[in-house]
Length: 225
Image 1: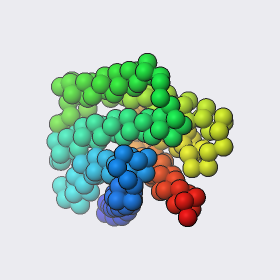
Image 2: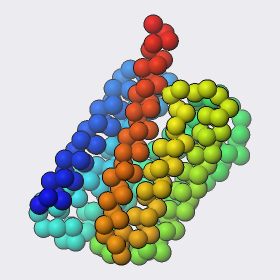
Image 3: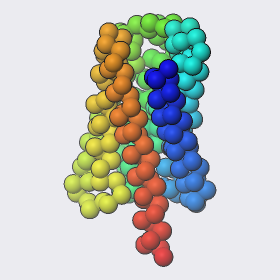
Image 4: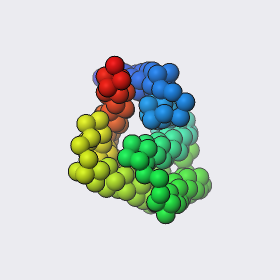
């Protein structure tokens, strides 16, 4: 009961926060602006995670996680897809923020990794509808995802060092933390369920990313005022 209560409160607060911020930024940002991109990114994050978190909350309050394995697995699949989209948008936020107009090879790499991730997620060997999913495919489908994250960490860290960027200077750190908390869950949560608690700070790292977008909008407004 305690786990169900704590997780439900946290998940509702998290989903509400990122979706509300996302909708707010979409409304405030003009067509094709960086602010609107951040808003779309936040809504994609919240909407995608809801496919996994809502069934999880339901399972915790009813018949348990294992009895709802199929719904949880489908939700996990949807979240895997939306998180890939999230990182692609974050890549284009980097390009627009720092005025990058070339680097077509980098575009190809990011899209190639995203496509590889989506293909791996779609393979039946993932056994999404089962409760105990194979670790091998859990690792395989996260390799291109982690590669996307590493590229973004390097790109944002390099620009943060080169340019005095108040809004996104810690973006590299937020992405680093999200993966630092996520990777142990992928590798060890099946054997040590308590490690699953690392998903809480991982989620907070994503909230930090969204809040950076909100702060960027506020900073832009102050400059224009």
